Length: 385
Ligand SMILES: [Zn+2]
Image 1: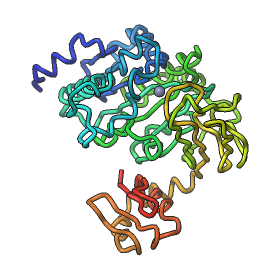
Image 2: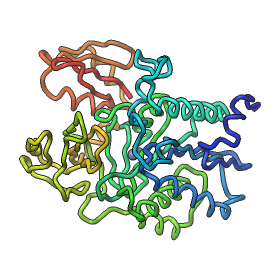
Image 3: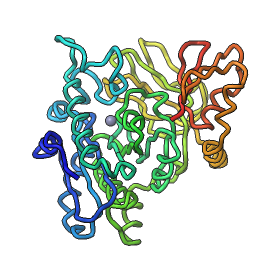
């Protein structure tokens, strides 16, 4: 296939492309994102290390791999972002808030970064236009608190299938709470995408875990074949702590903050720590914030940037995951529009009037693979992923 000249140029000697390799043998296209947040260098270092070690796979490599750097300016300065969070603006494309259509000084620095990243992704997609069903995207991050490694995914069956091959906790449906992420953008384009969180920002372990994750991902995506002992070795490196069940979790509460400077998480909360309802968690504007629900604390904010104070997650039973897998493949979707209070608003979307349909609405739509967001107090928007 002929590659368009403009795409070719973008993929050649682009400072954003940390790693680009295409083997002679056909196979999957793996696209890695690193450094979407400038204070998270672990993924960047891991990619550089693995690209170096990588020579030994030459000749036994299938398909292609690309590693794209995220927020270059912020990486240079070692800060999360310059003007706005690069990993929260991807939902704005093609809306009235689309930065690319806005002129003037109000444009955040991340606007340019996002357009460049988008352009690189498009060039890769164009180059492999005859192989689109074999794409896998992964976005590498770290957290401000101490943590074991875990995976974030938008809850589609395709994402679950690849995610469950990794021996770490899996957080489902994160896109309902944290919007505008690159992962959601990729998912909405129709591709599989995983987020990998390796541990604390400055922990050497985070680099090792990122590297192990990349080895496993190259294997599970089908780019390389690891031996059984290699597989075990890499899996051991990302394996979770004993006290964190290696299973699926869903978000049951999300504490947003207006201003991270006025938010103070109480010391000592590690990711996945079990908490009881009413336990004091943080101070905001001097007021004590208690846990509204029991569960496990997730991504407590220990840096003065960002809008996600903390989340609370709980385990999802494997039984319900099985059931939901079955239902999603079934034709049950066709009867949703006949339910009281449910109105079909598009091919894949519904609006639910909560005055009529009170009970279990969210649960039913989740089970069927819909993303559920609140339009207002009385209306839910449900969109099939
Ligand atoms: Zn991050």
